[in-house]
Image 1 (tube, rainbow, N blue to C red):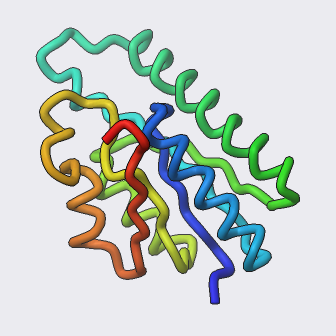
Image 2 (tube, rainbow, N blue to C red):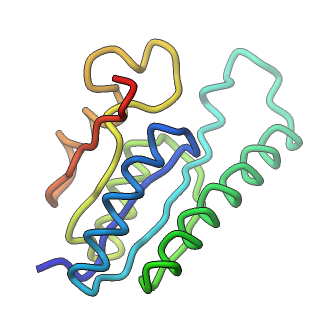
Length: 142
């Protein structure tokens, strides 16, 4: 049923809960897990975004996808890692289309302040625009 599973991450504790579910589902179905981090420099539009800020975000992304790859490897799950730039929900859905993703697993909230209202704006937009099922996972603190 699931051959390619996408788990987008922002490196937050909320995203880690979704990772646990994604790894378990991938192990159950023998699927490959795609770990995706999106660098969204537009979130810092009011600041003078320098190349250093973008590099710091990319480093954060490397650490986040590496943590997913490690968790997946411990469960015997093959992992594809990716870091991309752009609008987060658009990048997630574009990645899903380009990589024949069968399921997206993501937290209901990330770490941004006002984006945490209700389901979370990124998650809600992915749910509305994705061509595949989206499994949302609530964190234990919600």
